[in-house]
Image 1 (tube, one colour):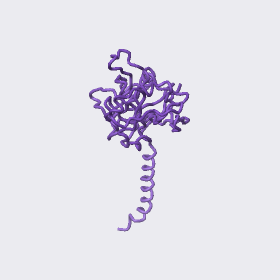
Image 2 (cartoon, rainbow, N blue to C red):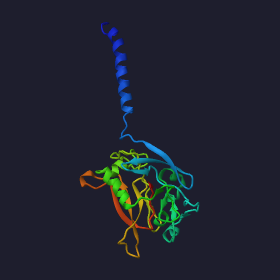
Image 3 (cartoon, rainbow, N blue to C red):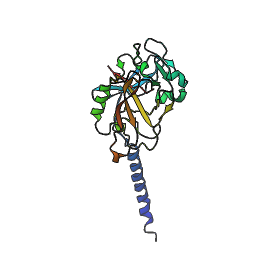
Image 4 (tube, rainbow, N blue to C red):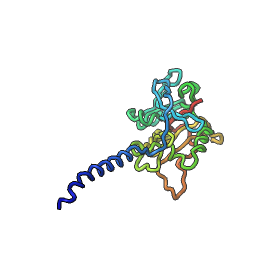
Length: 244
């Protein structure tokens, strides 16, 4: 009856070590390919941003949140729908006018703001062209949006389980603001401006190119998770800058 007691004293510590070792191994396995943030950059308002290198390009790893042009002038703020809809120049806003969310999702800008000659990108950086966005997608290949999206369900609607954030771009779903000033799609979609005008635009409905990223598409439909498309220049989108 007492035969197993001495042996159990020796076996239990061994089992405990194996369990602890197993737990330690699991917690140190990153769910994405390792990446390295490069030196931070600063905008005209004094905000700092991480940057990452992807292929031959260097990108901001956060959404722009500046309220100033490079010369120090303020970018006009549009709280109300009419202010946004009938704006003649550059405008910016916080999603749903919630400034506390700006630290995460940045600000939304209309096309006039990102192309204003006073500039909103930090010195040595610029708003990407459509071709520069395409270069990024070509480098990433299949499921580019999954590789760009920040993984986990903290900022994206769950489950967001296909996201890997493989290069540290950490695409955030800042949503958008439509031409009448209505907000939509925060935590569900990311829209990033390019500085490229859509040439076939109708004079009454000028458009520009942009990048859209969505989460958890049905893989059986073979829908791309990142798409370059064009839309009205009066909508509000997030901004990521690229190094000159």
